Length: 319
Image (cartoon, rainbow, N blue to C red; front, side, top):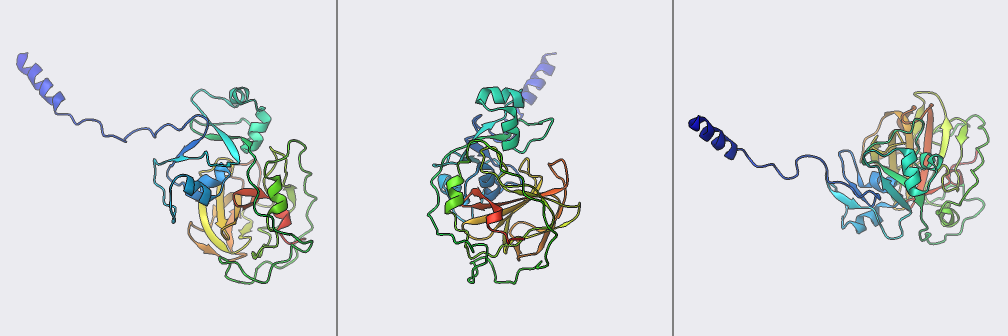
């Protein structure tokens, strides 16, 4: 018996100590002021979700170009002049419980975060609570003819002639913006340069079933109805900075950088046909329309100026 006890003691002493860093990710703050990088994240996708631009987020976290991040890295989201605040879902939370904690209605939380019944949420998920005022960009005069493309191409755009010039079918009238408190980025809508060097074109054909809204809980893009597998095209030339499905509420998502100010996004796709870091031309087939993370087949399309959503109808050609 004594020999057996001695043997067990020796075996126990020889076991290796636990390895630091193996196991659950570091917990993020419950108010959503930090984000722990997971596989598939890019700085662009994190900035998109946080409602800020990449340079601002990078400076706040001492990250230099080419903005490399690594799994497990904790990023601060409380950027100066941030446009959104967040709540990080904790174990045992429900959307109704969070609404009581934060003073938001369930309907507002669902709209802000593109949630559909039965409103499933997961531990660690950042939920947008509200928008906060931020400094508007430098005013740039816009003219009534601002829909027409400028002659000078952008640094990213290669000057390729836009494809898809055929006249699409007549679209339904966009839904009226929801009434309510104005979206904090409303000043940006007036000051953002519409007459940019970027040549914009429609990403797909079909009727608009949900228009852009300046309401705080409104739609920050436009939704276009179509058929499953319908071609989704790049609205302008640029580089793919995100292609994946890590952002809840967007499904299979593509984000394209057009220049230092403008990004565009294409959500709810069935199939993604481009990869991150790939250069795309205007009108290039980048995805197939689908219903990922939504209840029906549609394209959710957004344009963001310096991290803030702007009305795509001010940029797209009149049809």
